[in-house]
Length: 364
Image (cartoon, rainbow, N blue to C red; front, side, top):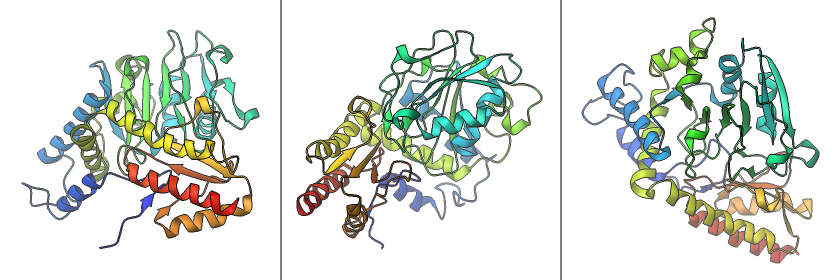
């Protein structure tokens, strides 16, 4: 069997070994069916049980109130960048407020402009998106259709510690890279969505959590697969959904509940992992330099630069030689990036921290 390495990729990302092992066992034949999970009908009783269990797990972990729908859709976060304004902005005669705190919120803003009037409530570009805004810095319209933000920006490594205050305006959030990493007060949100391939499952499914009154906003003239109302009425089964990916969501959320013990425990573990790396960066005497301001550092994605760019390539190569892979940073920030999502074991982060210290001492 191929030896597993520690995968620090920003996504598709590392998944819990327990979930992968269970999927491996069920790949040939799902117990009680004699059919592979890859072959199972989305209309079958067996799959109905799987999708209902996945939703129940999400409702348990996030304490999702009864007046919210949970949808399992396709198209990733990028499709949601367009679907949210299609359903919540078009035809309202209003504008939407966008807090642009990184690459992904900027992309969401640009997609929204194709559907209606959009206002930038704050733009972090002058600081190369190295922080999130203070509430006092936000220019918000009390009559906006919604306020949009990205809770964790994977490229710049900035993360909100609490939600921006939007008053009576619905809050829309792209939580793709930190959903299920910590408890979240869902009742503060009108719509929260996340592509799965960071903390929830494999690429191919997107989780959408939307309040009932916003479901009702969907214009009747939208194509059916872009209409939240029709998708909610069909319970995510308007067409064939990504059955295997939803099955994996069920297994990953089982792991979070049964092995981790819930999101509070997961949050504590994630903070410990992040601290291991930030302590190395802060204690390196400038050899390593973080991107985000300390108060807004992400617990999920740790981008850092080496003071001498000539060290970047040797660092990445030597780390890979030790089984620490996918550490190259995004071109817009440079340097390196360690994505330490839920399923990255603390042992892997400790090995990376030890390697960083060793590499720093050898190359000062």
